[in-house]
Length: 419
Ligand code: C6P
Image (cartoon, rainbow, N blue to C red):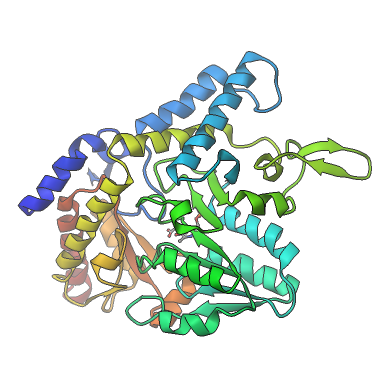
């Protein structure tokens, strides 16, 4: 480990941080766990686990319904978490944050609510070839229902968006430009602010898929000026089952409800109903209350350990070190741009070894990576690769874990090529 890297580990106090995550001290197949599947979901610190336990132990009740103390406390904590989320991404108001189940549901909410009401034959929705299926399939379905056309910004072989082609694709027909702020396969971080500006210049709205970005870098929706931002708690130390949609308030006021039932209404008559104020207009039924409180605790935790700028810097060092170290593995092909243009994940293919076989050998050494197309088949198709292995890092990963990854991959090479 270089001096600079060990300095970084000290700065973020990584050794100490790791003690906050009970799962990081477990063993897998008799060896210490090395968790490099953070892009799929992150681990949870005790602060989050305890916040959720405390809710169930002390104040479990429904929100927005009761006059009794427990319900009032639960409602206050549930709404306080929403305010933390709003501040975390610098939204103007807590009213611009809708709780959803995850980033996928957030995108579906926009596609079904805004899309069905606003898209017509001849209109175009622009996405990119580096999208996760969550930002492809809802638009395919909505395009089919509305007669709109779905178009893609191509990616280059280096894993960048082909910005030369963008101008020709963004036209006055484009009504929505939906793109990721960080690819979960290539790691690429596109120029979000500039893409939003270009969308607005032709009168389109801009939806940013922040599933990989909000968890790993500072995000400021006012600076980006995006219209929508979708993200999940589980990738940022929070629980599964809860995510958020940020949307500009005016849009939320204009959009029809997505799901309907209790809590999202103001009044219901036999033949019609009226809607609650935003954001509650978009939150039907009993929500994920403990999970929302856990989401808030995750945000407190990320800020307590140093904040998103420090986390992003640390991960950039880690990924640069990982990409250098992986060059030592014979027959390993990395995809995507160089470290300075990516977040903390790297996908790779090993000559002559199926990614599932490589991942199984890594697992024997206690190393968790993801193998497959990572729910982003079009980007693999474009690069002519069926599947990859992906190592994805978070602030609690240590540089030593990269050395273990390299050694385990070399062991896989030896097993397959020199049995
Ligand atoms: N990617 C991965 O292993 P959900 O599942 O709704 O929390 O997030 C969906 C999603 C949307 N956009 C991007 C860029 C993503 O990476 C993901 C989730 C995970 O890469 C699980 S498939």
